[in-house]
Length: 496
Image (cartoon, rainbow, N blue to C red; front, side, top):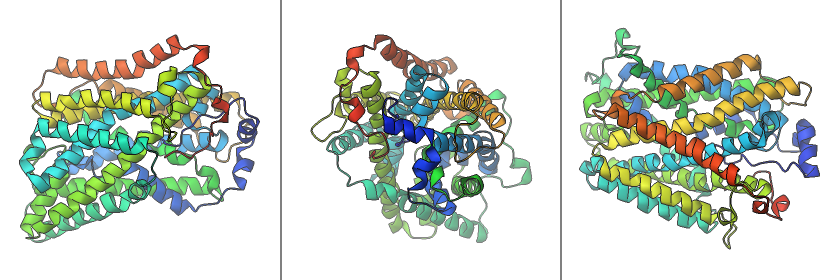
């Protein structure tokens, strides 16, 4: 999800000039190295939050991370780089130029809508982390989880609505504070644990490289990892800041892929070494592993410190994301009149408070499911799948738009041209489409719940957020919804 995906103003001369010659437009901007871009990409994609989900499968998590990296992460990175180097305005402008403006609205809407389910799952992770400082038993308590989600989310809305930039430093330091240091510590403790002769809780033999085949439901495991790799298009907008995009961008992306895979795979393996799969919580698994290692090495006093680091990074990221997608949705709605005036209103700080509050009401309702459904891990898994499903709609549109733009405008200036673009787009599109289909098949993570209930919840969430609501807005759209001052709104960057 890109906080910088802001629509270009098609009627503005500056916007047209920039789109006409993106290379020249970027020439005066400050250059960055390919290594810097690789680190930026890693920080926007990598996280420890998904580690417990794959730790359940032990050594097979390597395979489960590699497959989506090849068929989704790589095509997304290279295709979005070409689009970003040729057309300003992010996903909205890419899809608008390649397909149509209504479909472009759908793409940006899906970027925004996926956060409705993303925040409850993110804050459920925070709730389980906090519980290890208070009482570890709370990690599986649905009422406690729901309360923490509601309180933290509305606190975030209050902070964001005041237009403060106080969280910027916290969010930017998230990679180091909440990912690299805890992740490295977790892996280090894991290697020392095994080096002292302790047996791994999960088998680490060659026969366990591939996940155990339990039918087509086994494929669902790969689907959830698509979301783990989402967001590559966010940093593609920096491709023209490289000195030699054609050579340096692929190097940057392959290095970023390597670092992301290490950050995803090694902590997941470390967790599987110390926590048996049948005892692992999908929300509290990271802290379960830290707690087990710290108790073994008699350094239990580190538990609250690590918990604070993980929570600080997650909350900093949430506060940044709260403003980003909703701001992009606001800007295109003011320019094109996609949302009713009530949702376009700004508070005295210039923040889209009505959108945030409306989103918060939906998030609160969703959070209550944690209190109503006994198995917290099942709810977490369902929300992760719905989030992935909704977000994949945007990627389907992006791949189609890329093919159309290469076909219709082959001579349009691009700072970077992806090799075999059509092949990359087809692979990415097919992988995304299959992931959406497979996402309707319950995996073992759903526990013993009804398969039809699972399909109903996932399908209902996808249909409501990805189809009914956005097309309802398009159908109800009125010329009067367009704001007179829309053209005066800045269209490049500057989002919190």
